[in-house]
View 1 (tube, rainbow, N blue to C red):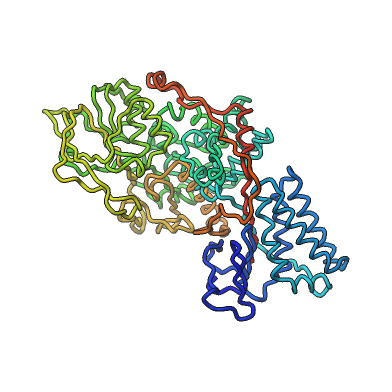
View 2 (view 1 turned 90 degrees about the vertical axis):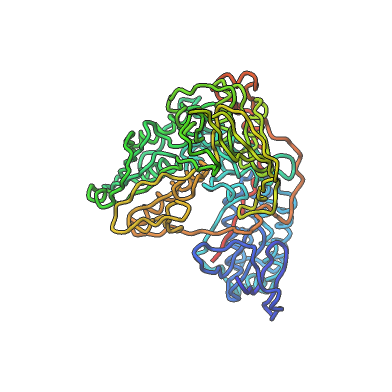
Length: 637
């Protein structure tokens, strides 16, 4: 909203109802509708914002209270009873069974709820009601006098949390954690599966941006959200493994999915759940895409991923392996009855390093993605005395830790920036250091040398950090005269990947971005070719597994909407909104996160057994009890 009639967002009051100063009329950091339209009025955990002076604050407040009540768990009783009591007073006033004194009582109850609730939701949810009662006193007095009514309006509702908003797939994280706390592991798993069909997999290898957004991190430690997701999946396996729900109906429409990685699997599952007949075409001899050929088994046991894939297959999703499609003939597929095509090919091609000698055809010069794929497909790899891995992401560390387990004697990573800029997970970096892998920071290769057909050395140059580049990280710059040589038998390049796109045969050329990814409509995920959708790595570039799952979820929704002639609800955008902030926080006892066991580094480098353990059910419940339930409810029109 460029101008507002009133705002109390984040405790800052802007009141233009009587001609307030224009310079104070702009509110920028509050949730906004995704469909591009302005909200006439909005009420959320951090206050209320009124754009249209004619908006009915009484009805908005009542609608907000009803929605907030749905989130109140009742465990501490303060929030639930308090909101119930305020709603009862509202109902009484609506029936002309009350007085102006009831407004004071409502404000008093609201104050007690905010001060005494035990969770983040209860502490923050009632503040906009207090603001409404205080700043729209005349409206509420008219309501108490019977001159105003609660109108039934089509208010829209959004429920999120800092952790939920940070999660690419928007899992209901506080919800599934609360179910674990109450020993309802099966219900927790079902809730996770609504947006994440590979819970055991992501519970092991997710980059967990949710934990960086966890409000608890500023008190003691973030919740172990990833491990709690794994706990729900592991507990299900221990009890015999549940099945996925059957399709809600059966449709005749057929959908083709190209690529059986996380994006393709998520799309296939969601489309099958809606009743479509789904066929996945996969180039590899195994299902799982980069998850199966790009992640070592010490991080992601194959049986975990295969189990979750098997559940999708049992729903009726057909997966055809060894069926690489180099040319996607859109007209031919449509003639075969496919109403839509979802292209979800992964980023299986490594990026060049841009150094002298890397184009040589010689033994010991390997691409990181190819190295991991070959190993996971059973191609024999001869251990070397010395190997250098170039890069600082998870692929680089996966290559390094795999080399160590294969028997390479000296494993070293060279990275052109400092550790602070490393994109790899902290857990991966720490594990590699524990296992004895050396990391040379601020170092970049400049030349690969070979003797005959074998790599013998890698010339490097030291770097220093300059000003930030377009990524926001400080740009590495070479230090003149600092060249040095490392003798090595193998150089593995792991500096990023790009998709290996098939040729698209259609009436028009496929739109492709300048960096080689597919161009799609961001709202519909459709390419410039009607009926051809795309998502995952082929659109995003090399993304995380949870981002790929989100792409598959969204693609299924958009394909269904396209075929059924509907449009998906846009919801709210929380860009630049500090979801972690709340005006009041009760006392929280410091309680460190529960830890899981890891195989001793000296032992684990000799095996591909899973290095990280999981929570027991009891420990999972203890960890789940640390959640502050930072739900944020927003009601708007």
